[in-house]
Amino acid sequence: MGNYSWQGGVAFVAGLAALLAPPLWADDVGKQPLMVLGALLALAGLYGLLAAAGPSTWTATAFAVLIFVSPWAFGFTGNGAAAWTAWIAGGLAAIVGLWGATQARSGSRV
Image (cartoon, rainbow, N blue to C red; front, side, top):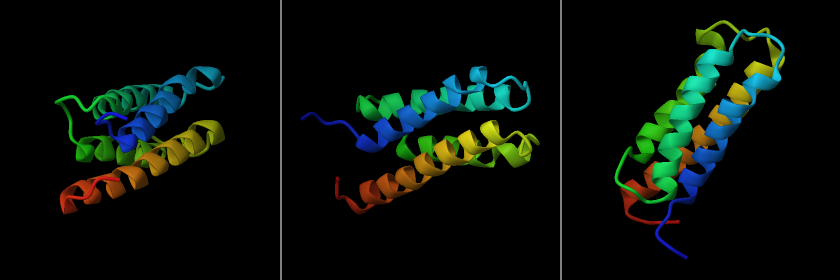
């Protein structure tokens, strides 16, 4: 089965969603923050997925939280598609990342 982190897989997929979804919108508001933060989350998730030395689970969780708060920080709460993509992808990755980080801290591996 390997020594990979399924939490890294969730972070990778959520980061890809935040990275690839903005070009589908007609409005330019919110594209750049989501694409940059999505790329960072996908990269951190890829490191976790491949069990490579790199960013920790906490780093991926921090990127996920940044994606979650980006609609308020960058002012695109009025753009429904961009805001909901950020809230769903960021929220899901943050919850799974926090769970994985606390599991790793306690020494158990799920």
